[in-house]
Length: 82
Length: 82
Image (cartoon, rainbow over all chains, first blue to last red):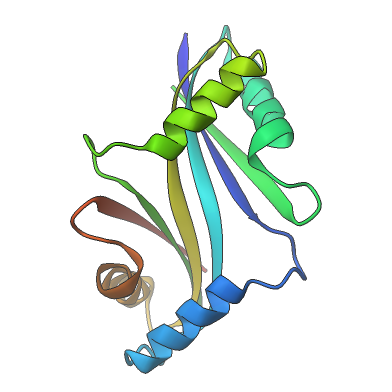
């Protein structure tokens, strides 16, 4: 069966996010006064052929740990759909 | 009220995604034979102070259109939570 896995990679709590800070400042300059804090991350969508959604999630998690996320400063979440 | 808006920016259908192609090849080299297609994107989380979730979504959409997404090649989705 084909599954679509989304891997969301974001910085761990406490890791500086200078890109987010810069975007926050730019939004303030553009008049977005109600935006307080901006965080940035990456999203990867993988088409996975697997026998179950549990197995697809395992494959996605393995791919994230081995290639897509830097475990020192990043964490990842996975969503799997048909 | 404080809301957390997630803005997911991805390439429009038909736009080449060389980063995704490269990651796909790397995953194949690492033995992930069941992964077929890889797409990449960016995710931004914004803390927004607004009177309602509808208003928070409007602000996030405005920020995405004005600063975070390139409308020529990118599309965006927004998720809002308390």
